Image (tube, rainbow over all chains, first blue to last red):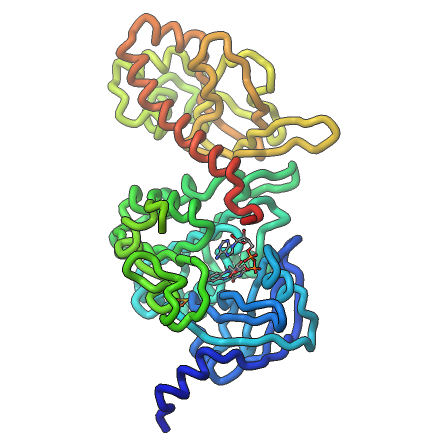
Length: 277
Length: 160
Ligand SMILES: Cc1cc2nc3c(=O)[nH]c(=O)nc-3n(C[C@H](O)[C@H](O)[C@H](O)COP(=O)(O)OP(=O)(O)OC[C@H]3O[C@@H](n4cnc5c(N)ncnc54)[C@H](O)[C@@H]3O)c2cc1C
Ligand code: FES
């Protein structure tokens, strides 16, 4: 039976309670929560996001860092940077939080079949990229991942990186600085990109990370010959209503909660350099 | 790859094939070759040492090299790694310059070592060669400047 429009709106704007199933530390200030899934969460395609409420504190947008359809529970990876994210990241097993969503447009996984995917992630930007890589690997594809973090201790999802490598995914991890024990790359992400783009006409890029990094990564991809239409970036500007009503997430002509957060570079490139946006 | 670079003809071929020398006219390549010699380093060897005169640059052929600084009371801090097709040492462009950091082989490394003093003299004597080399080394400097800016901005750091 179809759900009436006004009922859907109430559902989308009213947090539903959900229980934390487990919590694990990923890095100094980053925690991953597994949360019980509701029927809506089956729509949580990689790259989409939820609005999470820490009761009595506030509500923030957080990406899905897992794939509820495959895992039967919802995974969020949260960096404690302010009041709400700190409260959410501190929730112990059994605690309750409020959940709305899924919202927004995710990575265009259906459109990239048979193309070469290069994922470029920086810092916490690996969170929304992780379920995309998992899905690609599950369907037998071999994406390339270029991942940058501040230091080896801040690198996320090390087990996934090892698992993907073992399954033939080319993973290039680089850190901004490291001690003598680190055997990987040291340096920023963009210079690592060009050599990994083997067939620019067939390449599709997924980019997520701090905006400065994304701008440089996008330039490197363009220089390597990847078309702006084939470069998809996740624009994580802040959200309030998440349902296209309040205008808080407006980015030029787009409402990023509805038209993003993932958008082709071709659509947003001219706005990326506008300081007022 | 390095052993292939030990004969004169092989050195010329290897030099011409290095991305930094791509498209350099044969006459200029000959001038650079006159300042070049193959070099090999075992894991842990220092290619360059902080404070030493910038007398050599290395065009890397294989292996990776860590650029790092020593700080008293802590382990050396690596701020960049470079690999095949890249260059270790751009300070040679400036006369009297000294290396500002250490360069250490992360595994076996093969390179073409360029004698900086002779190369600078050759550039001085033939400004066209100097300009051609400038056009190859300045983008490396620019790329490192951009990278340094991103690292200084600490883009992955606390957004507050
Ligand atoms: C679509 C989307 C997906 C997101 N996914 C995740 C995720 O998976 N995990 C996660 O930890 N965070 C994610 N974020 C960022 C998260 O929403 C913010 O960190 C959060 O809103 C901060 O709220 P706060 O109350 O904890 O801190 P505040 O006190 O509101 O902010 C603390 C500091 O963080 C900065 N900040 C706030 N929002 C952002 C942002 N969006 N990007 C960069 N800096 C910001 C503020 O400028 C301030 O300096 C996502 C944001 C969006 C829009
Ligand atoms: S967050 Fe309200 S319109 Fe997008």
